[in-house]
Length: 114
Length: 112
Image 1: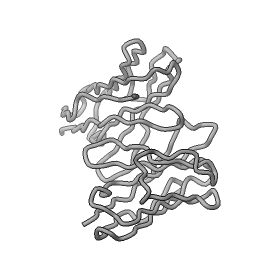
Image 2: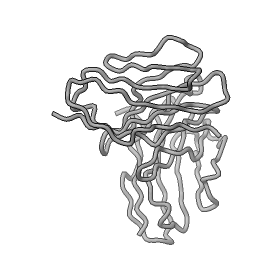
Image 3: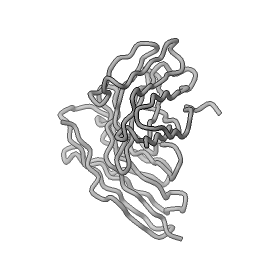
Image 4: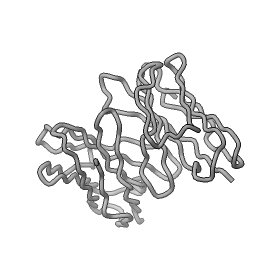
């Protein structure tokens, strides 16, 4: 399977705990995006990378959230001191710079904060 | 603010019928991309069809076609000969500044 992969697919945690999600983009894609999708809503942009550089962060991305793409390949999204409002599906997508309009999405990580 | 509005939260149609999903959007840009994405239950988001705003011709992909009305900022999706596998959430979206902005979605049920 050469598509975008995400790990874990599901995560249940207690309020106050830290969680980390991983995204592996399509291998030749230099852009990687994170979106968040809450129940009954469409995905909302969080942040994106071009290679290892983080180019933009949404105001939705509070100080408790941090994303990295250290070698320009996989990316991690960490949430510190989770809150119940963080419960959502976290989607990763990737694209080529030259074809930025075509973003390929991964299966998502569903987070439940108790 | 740039927004995408899908006025139909949920729709049901019989298999083999044609269905049209509505979408309006708001942007001050002249050139942009519009999309319809499909999200089946518990499965990942898939691009259904894409339209470049500067192209007047409506995009088509097999049973899927769009009616793009740029002046009205309308971008509807028509699914012909609907199949059970078309059951999914459908999101209208557009791209600007590298970010995809999604509507809230329309849940489509294809009934046998």
